[in-house]
Image (cartoon, rainbow, N blue to C red; front, side, top):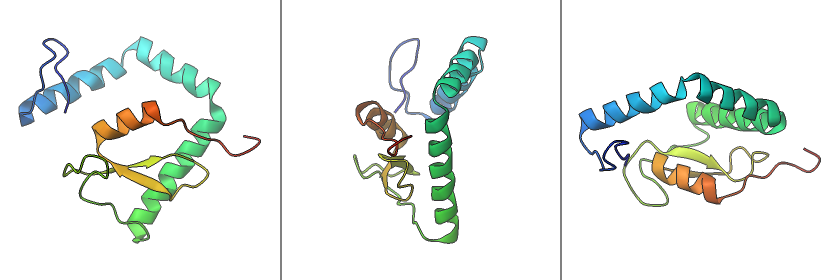
Length: 118
């Protein structure tokens, strides 16, 4: 669950979640945030290409029925629209299904791997 930037309290109401999403979206649209994103993309072209390719393959597999998105997070069990987490982008359909908060924590702890030579 998201925390309010002003008071650091968990905001569990639907209105609070909408407000926090709006605040995050506004922060991501600042020139500083956009510049940081462009810098990361320029510094990591191989990783960007592989991650986008893996994301698209998962999307297509879900759409065609080869992958089934579970209704709950595999880490905490929370009922949610689970996100596909990749440990290795060269194996795009080998994913762990996580809620958004577990996915963010997992991404910080789990290093991503690139194929040899990449």
